[in-house]
Image (tube, rainbow, N blue to C red; front, side, top):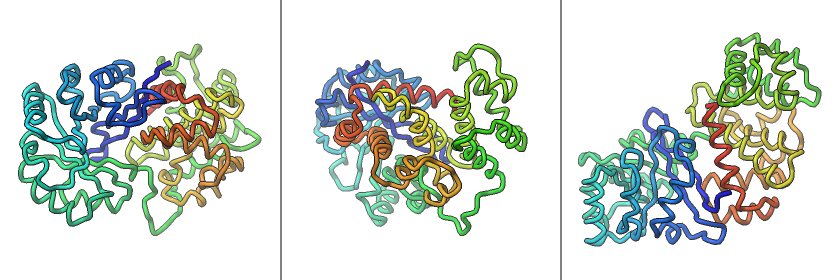
Length: 400
């Protein structure tokens, strides 16, 4: 069990495919101040070695936060320059010593980014060295965003709009010339004139209904999946993957039910339906849904609530259902026979399930102080969360 905490946030390119993940570290339940936590060589390098980066981020790059002490130490030089972007935190003072260290890192092949860039002269000495400027969309208004684009794009610096939370902000940043985007805009529903579910997605919604129904009817599920043979193909491909280590080939749905049992089979058809619903959306949305499902399930087991693991898995999986269907969550829930606990939690109501969801969201966002409080609320041992998160990440990366 690790005493180091890590979370990741996706960074998208213009095609809305994941270009990189920003990695958010914390050293222990007692050390919650990120700048101090990032101040030593051991925090950065040990964390990168404790956690299997291939499992966590796959082929993407990693943006790694660097404070002044980290920049001046040998820590960064132990990281692979092909896999990381060194992100200089906003509170760093760009002294001559820091700039010289960054120049050496640049010479060694590292890419550099400045975090929370808002313009001004503070970073003038660093600008010739950086590859990315991360512009905080919560702090900068449109005029500042535009001024930064007009000044720095001609210099060949890539602009990354961070904390982009809406489709409107995403569209604006693209128009201004920003080419990378970070934030949870992809987990929000798109505003549409019609809120009808597209015909090609109705089968997936009906499968989700069957997966959540009190009385499970495998024959109805089989009939639904016959209407879209690609769903059956995806299900069997998942179940027969050598990465999942199952014994016995799964050739059809009845055999899948016999081998897995009803509870496990419900989970798998839910995953297939959600991944199919994400068609036409950034693939990270499907990956986020699956990872959240497994993370909530892992937390259920870690807190002695294994009996609720299946429901909590569904809670996490459907936490982005509004974005999948481009409908308000309350409208989505009208179509699904979920338990009251799940429905209340997904709509922001207060109950124990909402506590688990809040803990998952806090950990996902790397808001460590909130994680500590939320873990106490739902009686999850905080030190077990990194393992829960890594297991969930690994499972999601296999499936999506």
